[in-house]
Image 1 (spheres, rainbow, N blue to C red):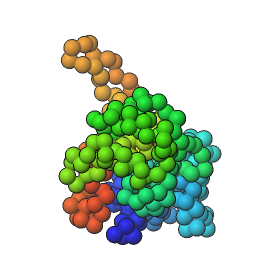
Image 2 (cartoon, rainbow, N blue to C red; image 1 turned 90 degrees about the vertical axis):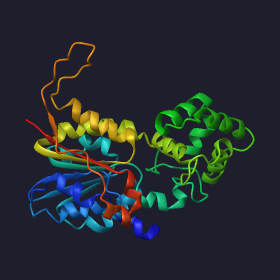
Image 3 (spheres, rainbow, N blue to C red; image 1 turned 120 degrees about the vertical axis):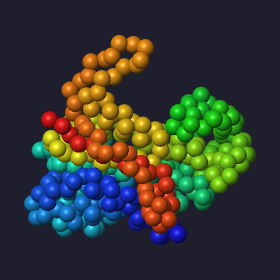
Length: 307
């Protein structure tokens, strides 16, 4: 099943349609993964079109080079999409930007990456294995409060304090360095409380977000995307959990020119509109979910740059 899921890009048609690709346009896929969305965009470009590919994962970039480095329309950069504005290739502006957030299927399926509790492996979780501290490194030095805050803020784990306390107690005798070790600890502390859902799910998500600085990268990437998009350019973003989707939704709203404020206070003057949502949030079809159940939490939002 993992092999079947590995190369299935989520909401492929909807995300690429959202870009409204022009044959001679300039587009950025900031989360190349294994190239499903990139191939679809490239198939719509003519000889004068341009596709820029970024990913923070060295394995994803190796795949991009192997498949696309011979195409003169394509440029490839190993970096976080949050740094898109630092790439000379984006200096002239972009007609569209696509971001497929979160962890990719290949990252989940390769046990050694440490993203999944389904197999015992080193507790790493870094998307870019060339830099930064692993999840094991973080758990080795973080205070009980720091760990609890991460689990609560990024995973909405209501047993965050109990889990953090157990981690700090256990690490004095046995450093927590394996996915199976951490998953077993969490199951011991909170038990199997949700049918069909492993008790470590929220904690693993939270640690992954913290280790990779995902929400900070998203905030910076959204600001850069707004500055780089040409008038009429499209932003197409797929999110996989409520924290990501809320950030994207609020960013579009806050740049839409709508008057902000609460019913109890005076309205706040609206800033000039710079983005307009294109339609409503979109979700995977039943047909897609039947083929790729990992798409079940995906949400697609599309916005267009205004003058």
